[in-house]
Image (cartoon, rainbow, N blue to C red; front, side):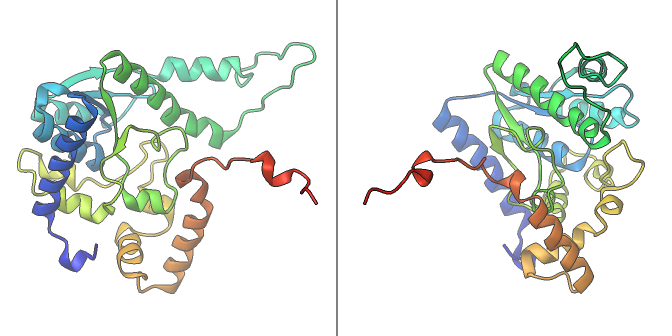
Length: 263
């Protein structure tokens, strides 16, 4: 899908039709999604509300302790009139650290210890959020909506068993740039939430600062084969290769591949 021919209105309407078609084929009427206050979950919530009715969309806010922009998450739910609930995962996160020996607990004799590990700890949040969303979705007999976009998926800016897990991925065929364009056609959404600078809310940096490339460069790389910047292309390609395991099903070891061949 070349951005030169990208029609945001037709894409918006096609996504709404796709949600309705899936709901009819699979026999569900409710969806659950995490509401971060960022553009992706905001656009997803609006599309689902259009497709299924706002009363059938359940938005869950999942702060890990304090979330500076949680007011944006609440505003999304209120503007759209969808069902809302806040579940703070901070206590679960702290307890997991404690139980895995990261807060000074001593491992039992004969058991290995787990030293503090920053990246492991950072990825706990998305995984606890997804477990919580799965719990709620199953309790409501609802489907869980994946909100990640193609740009993030391409460069592996997502967490395995976290935001990569869902019952259907609504924006996975759209780049970050295209998500904004679709969002701007949804007149029920405040413009500032659609064009809000993406960030993880933890590092104090924007997503682009953390990635070392811009979303426009990723878009051009995906849609046109090059961002026009060799260094940016090389970085995106490295990130794409490194994140391949997040986009693939786990490899299966088939014993038949290792059995002696019969003569």
